[in-house]
Image 1 (cartoon, rainbow, N blue to C red):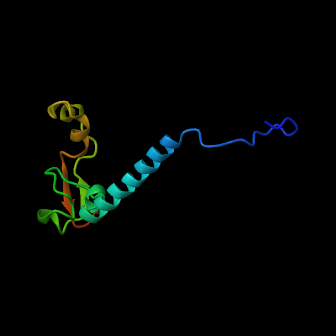
Image 2 (cartoon, helix red, strand yellow; image 1 turned 120 degrees about the vertical axis):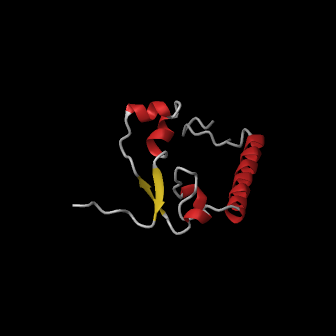
Image 3 (cartoon, rainbow, N blue to C red; image 1 turned 180 degrees about the horizontal axis):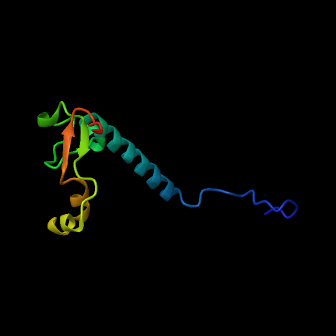
Length: 107
């Protein structure tokens, strides 16, 4: 350590094995990502799905219906109980359908 400036100029990598492991991990993650994009279908990750687990706009039965419509936005306690404990599934996807366009509010 230099007493005049207070700086330690004798620095170096203290864990070269960890650096190599980290770089190998990053390379593997890039490889897995590229493989997933080339072999998979990224639309399936972000597209909505209806109550029968058809992916809207992707799966064959609902290919022409890209949007998801929630038929019941505020389920009650009874709806949560009948789902067998799966509150989030009951609240969100038990009463959804794929539609061509969003419905408009009737006057």
